[in-house]
Image (tube, rainbow, N blue to C red):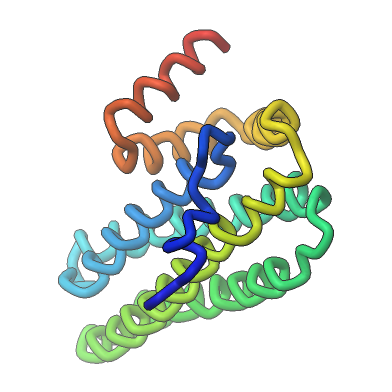
Length: 196
């Protein structure tokens, strides 16, 4: 891919507040690891059942994340239509993936591998689409936010998102995000939590 936005540095942070960075790092890591697990786990085993439950939790967090973006971020954008259409596609995909999970859970053992392969391929397709979606948010949507808002205003949006999250969901998000961050980024998150 030859993306002139990257070559021109148009999406460099340049000291600006990175609204999407940490949550997207967490989602990228969690989704990549889940794709590997779906590819190498025997779904008729206890480990396979754990993987399916973990996938459900991951999809629930992903759904909550896009709800946060639509509720708190998109109102500050002149045109969030494309992102919202992508979110609608995500929601349709989440239901399709849930149906595939149920297909595995309800299948006779001999048919589980075929159902598991369908889930693996479908989740891989979702991850590919979501990687592109997150890339668009970080290289197109975020620069528009920077042009329209101060870092204090963006930070207030982020604070509103965090205040809307239940303690259990916040713990799940942090469990997903923290291992995906650099040591310096983890230290910054912990410093904010201590100040809060």
